Length: 124
Image (cartoon, rainbow, N blue to C red; front, side, top):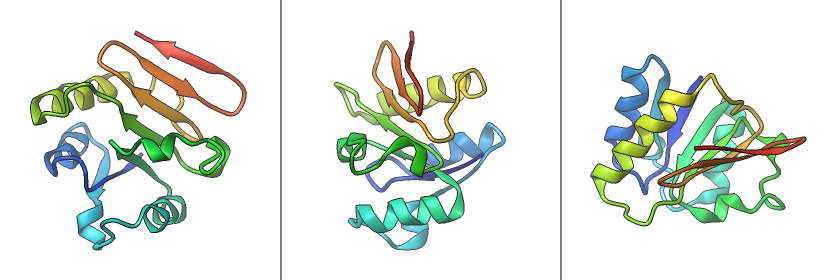
């Protein structure tokens, strides 16, 4: 799996994915800061799962689940670096248990909501 870490997350998040054996880079690596459409299109073209804090990507009418490799949104009350890192580690620990391809994951402090093609689920 390949992950694209959005500009609103610490660059260390990409390293967490790499340390877990995945491919990962950041929006900074491509110089596409501030352009959601461009970032989304790059992720689709390169088969990368977008990891972001941007709730705009949760609009399934603009970003239908079946049209992309996956979007993971961290919807956290505290967006401190510590909380973000904790939650990214949680994501990494459940990869493989749930489908990401073509799905939208909303990661909260106590659960992960998953919207996909057919059904939605929650993981605590």
